[in-house]
Length: 282
Ligand code: AMP
Ligand code: ZN
Ligand code: FE
Ligand code: FE
Image 1: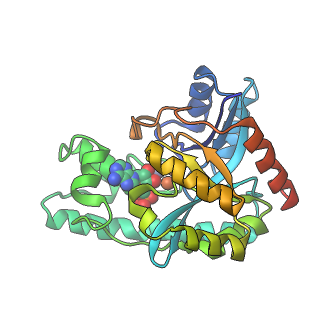
Image 2: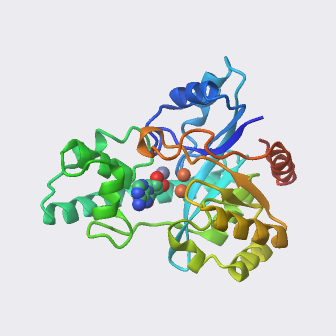
């Protein structure tokens, strides 16, 4: 059983449509795929329809943009009811913040000698969840940078000259919304981009105590082996599940091929049980 629990489609900043993603996953020999677009469930139905003709199981997921003490944390929700009103309202608010950030980003870029329009960005954004990767795609198309990585490294990454903040949910509240929607919550790529400085073991222990967080994504392309070992120890001490996933973005992240990292069948079974105990289903 090959299980990849973190993937993106064109409904956020992946480059495959849900149907293309499903075809790729089947071709890559995966048995289980969770679609976890940023802040939207929009791709789920298409992915499930496409998977019906294959042996692939598509699980409902979402990657929620949250913050903890002002710092970005990505939260994976599994088995949530996509029609949950409370979770849906928060996701809509986050997507609205994504939209209002774009013009401010374009103003910064124009000041830096990179004059792009909303239409330039929109040409690369095919879903409801617009992000910096779509701005990066417009920069690539305009010949200003070679690829998404260069756009982030030079302009768009946090602290970069064209970086603009946007609204994100509070981590603790977002975990509550996942549970309210019948799902289980897993912190994505826990220690990527310097997060080990603020998502320390005592902080994670407090989060678990106050929310009942279910797991940590430990095997992720952003995590070197030593990071995985330390996170696995923390998960063990805190009674958390440990998942592994590619964080596939299609051509948008060439270092993250489908199935690059996987989750064990035992952990998936346990995760499904936790979802059931929250009232949802995987
Ligand atoms: P946004 O959703 O607009 O905040 O953009 C965040 C997304 O951009 C992440 O989910 C990644 O897919 C991508 N990303 C973030 N940082 C980088 C980076 N340094 N290089 C390439 N892609 C990145
Ligand atoms: Zn992304
Ligand atoms: Fe993420
Ligand atoms: Fe992701």
